[in-house]
Length: 137
Image (cartoon, rainbow, N blue to C red; front, side, top):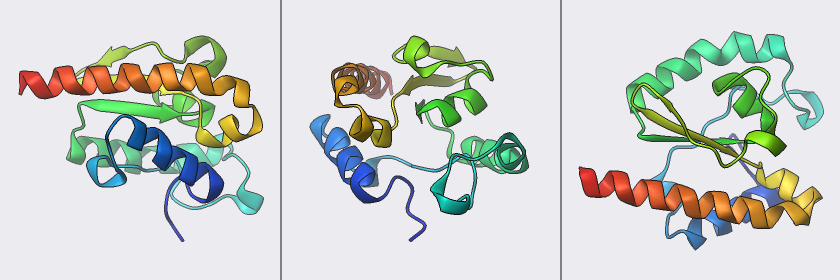
């Protein structure tokens, strides 16, 4: 309980990061909102706004080199409020010291397996960026 990206979507996510030779111990996973909305629905704008400052502080403290937005809720709150996941996924955004990319949420991949190929391309791109950053350090 309280684990981001859980259930069948979580198992798929674990396999996705394993495929690029990472584990949950190698990354930090969090949600836009810090509590689960009723019936596990997507959070509404007011819920996101209530939690966004906490998320900003988490990012500031952790200071990640890469931020991966899983799905449209994360992307709209981190990249741009008008972000469309089908058009904007796989594109890097450099904001300050952060390299930000969006891809499909694993739950979306369970609903539409045709998106898995694009998500796999995104994860290969993420791994390449990760390796490049690691080499520079």
